[in-house]
Image 1 (cartoon, rainbow, N blue to C red):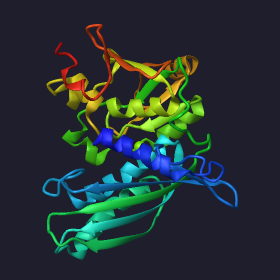
Image 2 (spheres, rainbow, N blue to C red; image 1 turned 180 degrees about the vertical axis):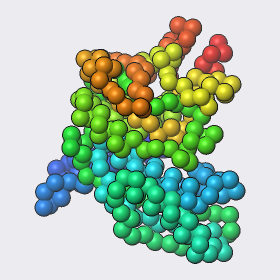
Image 3 (tube, rainbow, N blue to C red; image 1 turned 180 degrees about the horizontal axis):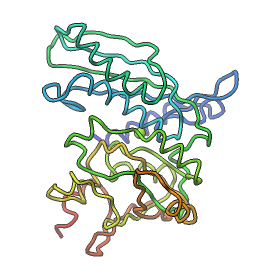
Length: 308
Ligand SMILES: [Mg+2]
């Protein structure tokens, strides 16, 4: 799906022909930016979550589902270092749903909204003809944070590539209850000049090439530097898990080497930040394996990284 998704995004971009004076950021970043006729701008994103794909109705409660749907969009707000201001939510409920189930879903939605201090301002609901289907779609508006909006396209050759938190294995539970890095993104933007940023929704091996493509640069990642999560360490191939598992919802960003050194000295937050590689000239995305072998970092190669 990821390869096809990227091709479709390119196609949509080619069809859009957006006026950059009205839409400074269009299709292909974590959020689109819309300049308002009255001055200032807003950013907008939407995320659709489906039962059987993003959550499992037999294992996850409806308040978990509501929270996750909101947190996915909040993670996009974080990716732009923006502040959420309002959300609307549309749901396709399973056949036979009762009002209490909708209220449970709503509880999860509100938990996310209240944590980040913005309201749910509307929505829509409809009902499937089947009992085992649920779709939830969040549309969220944000405004630029105090340090401006950060795009995917600003990475510079020589930049250090950094990530927050730990990578891989979120399927073992964390993907339903993750903390979107809204506050951390704004804090970071106030401490250093972030050149490019996005959130990790599909795994580093899918998302880093997207950031590099937008910035027209390459990258080299050092596998031994990856902050591998405890869950990913339990998998058969922890490095592949850290690179390819989706739904980490951590931040991926690039900063100058000087800023990386400054951040290493001054970052005082409990959320770890790790430099995992460097931006290079050209368009190749490479990984240095623990053995010292250098490979292309692509999805085709991931499952035999350490099996030569
Ligand atoms: Mg995103």
